[in-house]
Amino acid sequence: MSTDAKSIAVESKKAEAASPIFKWWVGILSILFIVGGYYIIERLVVGLTTTNLSSFTPWGAWIAFYIFFVGLSAGSFLLSSLIFVFGMNQYERLGKMALFTAIVCMIVALTFVLMDLGKPFRSLNAVVYWNVTSILAWEIHFYIVYISLLVTELYLAMRSDLVRLKNVDSLKGKVARLLTFKNSEVSEATEKRDHRWLKILGIIGIPLAILGVHGGTGAIFAVVSAKAAWNTGLFPIIFVVSAMVSGTALLLSMYIIKQKVSKKPIDEAMVVSLAKMMIAFLFIDLGLQFYEYLVGVYSLADSQLQGLATMMGSSYSWSFWGVQMFIGAVVPIFIVFWKKTSHNINALLLASVFVVIGIIGVRFNIVVPSQIVPIYDGYPAGNYFPTLNEWMVSIGIGAMGLLIYTFGEKLLPIEDTHPTNETGD
Image 1 (tube, rainbow, N blue to C red):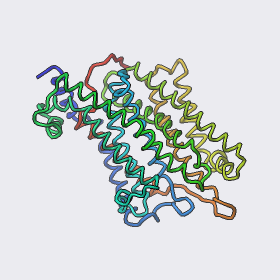
Image 2: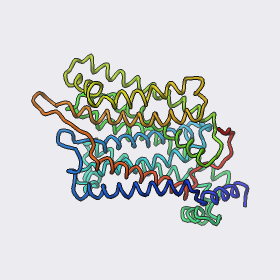
Image 3: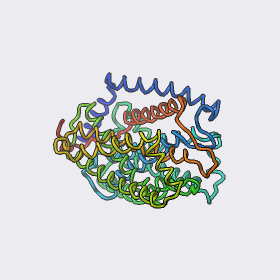
Image 4: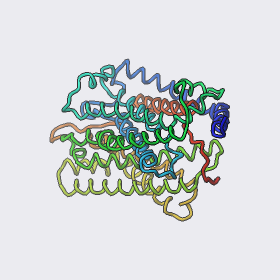
């Protein structure tokens, strides 16, 4: 057995020795999923009457979480492209994690959409009866191609490790034997071939993720002319940039937490670099949002002014000022730029978690306040806050995604096993 194979085997054995923390983690997630599952069944049986959705506010928390997780997926994939397409090898240990995260986030996102549909069992109709003039129908087809591409890329990224693992007597070894061909081998030629295909698929995936997946998700909102706050050509661009913000922040926080829990050394240089990249994307996102708001104010249109007033000065404004701006922008920027915290791993972890929370606020501020404003004079104003069912369904779906990721890491060689220059914290 080669040195690489032995190291992978050792890592596999260690991974299968479930720690108390892992057992508690899976136990808590399982309870949350079971409790959330009860409310999911209730929603499917009873219908949308379990929610506060109405003809005035037809989109709520589930759509906000849907666009949030699509953004996480697109951002994670685009970060993986920096590695596999542009050769930024300083982030190489995040490559497989980024691809697997992108897949799990898409599963979670589409589950949220399923919950939001009035007739969820008709969800395949958009595929079977493709309306080529519908952006939503195009999005579904883009999602199918995108997920297929992600799965293929992840397999290619793992293939060498899977072949090395297939002779290991462990649960990972059994999974590896199921996923590899009998005559599969690892050589310099096969690794070059895999990297070449990873680059080709990454090049194909970049415009797919930008224009089709998350830019297309933004276009679903942008073409709704009845909602002035959504009806802007900037929306698809903002969605893509915020995807890079949230995707980078998610992977950064996941990496630090995983290394700390497993008591492994942390690559400080990579963490600092990713934190700076995250803030750079955040500045671009804030700039685009500023111009979007500026144009809305200068238009002096009642619909635009009322939408901004609802978001920034009504009972919903806590989400904008508290979550989106303070937690999601001011605090992370301060942490990354202040000398005392700019290289502190714990501080940068806090910054990345705050950015993720801030982007959740951004998604809610996109979806909810704009639906509160009456479409025209005499039309009733909307009013929305998620019900207990909506919150519990969301928690259940989130727990499902975390369970998929947790067991995926246990069964697949997601974690990079190559040594790097790391420093402990």
